[in-house]
Picture (spheres, rainbow, N blue to C red):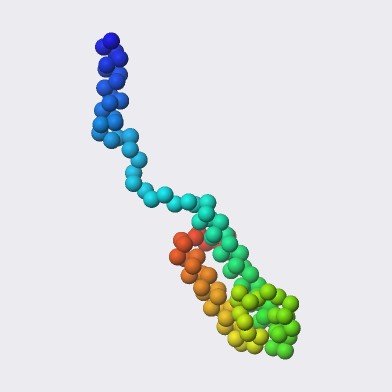
Length: 107
């Protein structure tokens, strides 16, 4: 009987003092955050590829090239200078969103 009582005291003491409590850390769903960061990285890659392709084209070829792509989420213009400006703005917007979400740097 004494043995049971002695062994139970440390357990009771642990619950009474709160030694077994976890620290108050807000729960963050890292899986969702990670997938959103991956989507942002993919969009940044698309904007970079789009920008490099537009830069390599002569101004007269930009409009036919844009007609074949769904680039409406980057720009609605067909003038090369404006398209490049819109792409740079979109890239900055995506980078700001990525920084806001505290995403790790892309590999």
